[in-house]
Image (cartoon, rainbow, N blue to C red; front, side):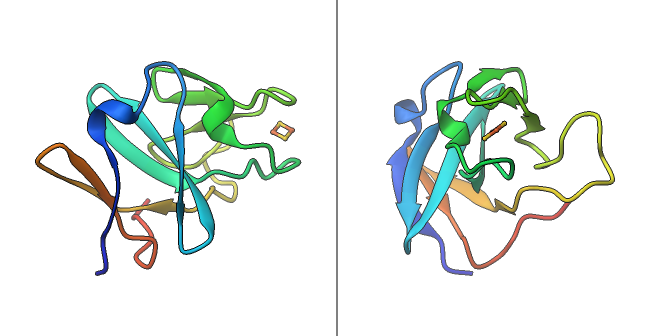
Amino acid sequence: MSYRRVAKKDEVPDGRGLCVQIEGIDVGLFRVEGVIYAMENRCPHAEDPLSEGLLEGPIVTCRAHGWQFDVRTGFRPEDGDGFPIPRFPVRTVDDWIEVDIHAPAGR
Ligand code: FES
């Protein structure tokens, strides 16, 4: 485990995500009911940053062409058996968000 401190909790906006860079990888941070989730910030369709999409509940809608993903799982809501966007474990320490990009989050 190698958690990196990436942002303060209150930097993650409501209704969309926050992009942070960790070792050259763009990671999107999303808040759902007070819990922070982290996943690769590239939409698999045409690589638009998902952190710029609209977040409603756990579903982020890509601003480019409307594909949707559940930020808790990385899967498209209508395709739970498809190939998910890679997600990463998150922990919070005091007011800070820490992410470990070397330990993919479980399904
Ligand atoms: S780039 Fe995300 S839906 Fe096309």
